[in-house]
Image (tube, rainbow, N blue to C red):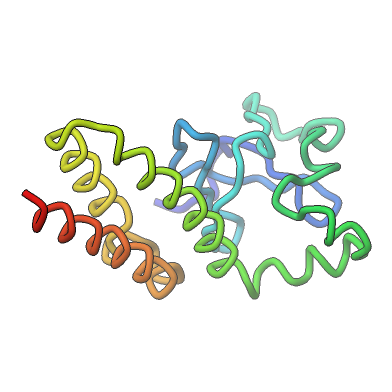
Length: 160
């Protein structure tokens, strides 16, 4: 099967709407999507607009795209074209940086849980971030994240 079927969502990129397939959505607002051509990237669900089944893209970009949260105040001076052109090159690095920030918060929250629940969540993170479970273009970037979870697992096991 190809990914050229009906799109599941529209993503605003380079001043235009692009059809994407949503591969994974997470409760914290993150989404993994497949772009035309097969590239996979991590984004926020708020930057996606659900497809209505028609071939017509939405009328305008989502409000959150006009002021992207991940760019921060320092990025405000960059022309939009430069930012968009840099995306494909640093896609894996950007995904890893965003996921690392999220992962750190998740690991801190685990300290408040009962030991059995903590182990269960660590095991789920190991399965999610294992390099073999990632698309080939993200494997090198997911390995340090997986190793961080693995070290946390080992520290937790040693404390038992």
